[in-house]
Image 1 (cartoon, one colour):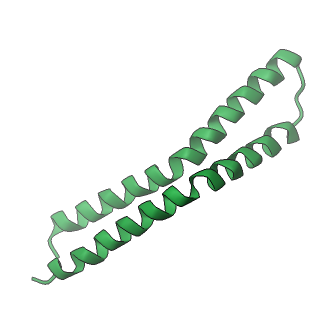
Image 2 (image 1 turned 30 degrees about the vertical axis):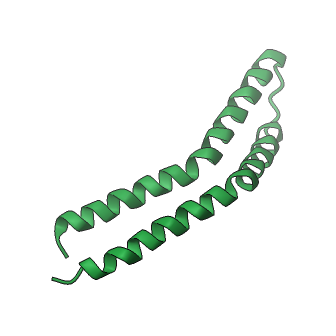
Length: 89
């Protein structure tokens, strides 16, 4: 297995992880920012006020994007399995 191929597979795996996790991370950041602004405006510093909405928002984002995530991961896995034949030297 050539070093270039190993680097290419590793790079594509990292890209896949970032692409799959992006919707949930963006949702958590946006909800966290909105709650932080609300807490700063009202001077309410309740810790549970930040966690519960983030958890709910991330779960909603997961439910909405789950079909796309599964399709993307299946396509990536098929591509990796298709490259197995080219690994022999």
